[in-house]
Length: 119
Image (cartoon, rainbow, N blue to C red):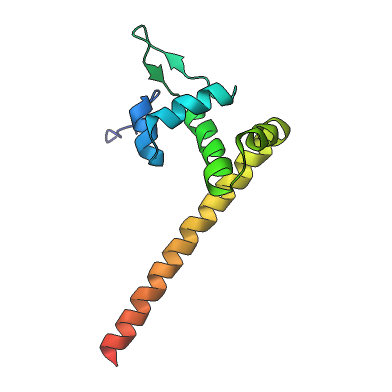
């Protein structure tokens, strides 16, 4: 029986890794920690923030509401309290659809380019 390597999943992310993932400044993450009680990362003995995948998902939800949908911080806070789990599902669906749309737009460009080259 061949050895099958398990996919390694990170258990903790640094603030720099989370900031890079969303293309935001670490200061924004620190600020949102003060504004949203749902965003509470663990801290190492040195005081460095350690974000779990669940923390990153919470940040993704907040980012979607504030940066992509244009909610104010108090408005986003209210929505998180009212519809926490349902909201995450909706955001996941929206992000999936955006990926599919991006793929289809790219495919259309490639087909158009191939049509021009052949014609």
